[in-house]
Image (cartoon, rainbow, N blue to C red; front, side, top):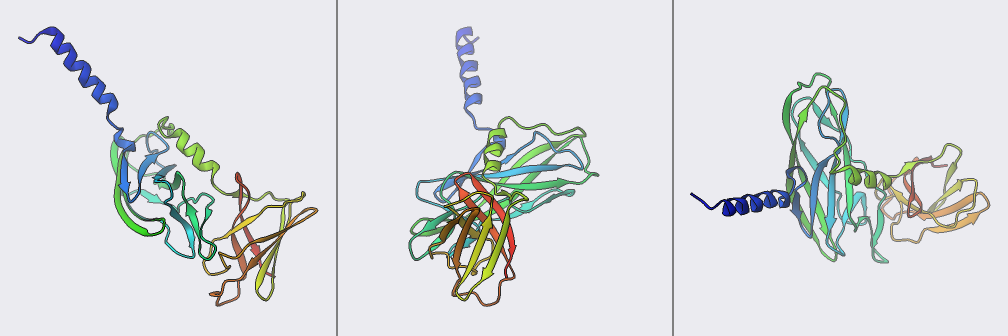
Amino acid sequence: MRNPIEVMRFFSRFILLLFLLPDARASAAAIPHGTVDFVAENQWIAPGRQIYFGLNFQLDKGWHIYWVNPGDSGQPPKIEWHLPPGLSAGKIEWPAPRRLGTSTIVDFGYDHPVMLIVPVRASSKLPTNQEVPLGAELRVLVCREICIPGKVQVSLSLPIKLMPPVADDRSRELFTVARKSLPRKAPRDWEFNVSDQKNAFVLTAKLGRQMSRATFFPLEESQIDNSAPQVVIPVATGFQLTLRKSDQLLKPVKRLKGVLELSANQAYMIEVAVN
């Protein structure tokens, strides 16, 4: 018969090991020069409701991934979902990007920890009292001076319950921080105008106060010269921003859509008719 003290030591080490093991629902998958976690905002799925999932990227210093419009090079992350019947994924909610690159080549992306949020809608007829697997194949391009493609499978399992979903404390802060980085709707009393000049678009903004800083990230590729300086002229009620046209612009732009960043914590989605 084993010594009772040895038995107690064994179970103590076993329990400690359990606490040290990573959570299966938030285990990191390796990508080139970084990791990605697949996390859920809620503890379970409720029929007829929407649940949000996140792809949380941690990148080595100096490396970056891309925004929906990657800029002069690269490509954004692509997700191929593997969901059970009754669940359908929406579009990625993209945080405001950063300008990356050199004086001649400028990309749009993220060189810092970032989470891409994706809404998933559950059918009202989804069977309850079961646990379902959710998976996705992620393709991502990670770059610095060179670019390295990566492909990884991520997955987790969640129960389906016929009751309002409850937030998962393990991922609550991740979603809070991620949503703060999303571009907001511009206030209704702001006015925008875009004039089409020979070699540039001039964006005029009336915000009710003078602004001396503004950066525009176009949603569509090949509309503006990404590496050209964006010249801001402050005016009493806002600013004028000159955006040099891209040499690859092949047809007239009817509406200019994108993210307007006014400060590190102020980014807005705008869509303005071009006159």
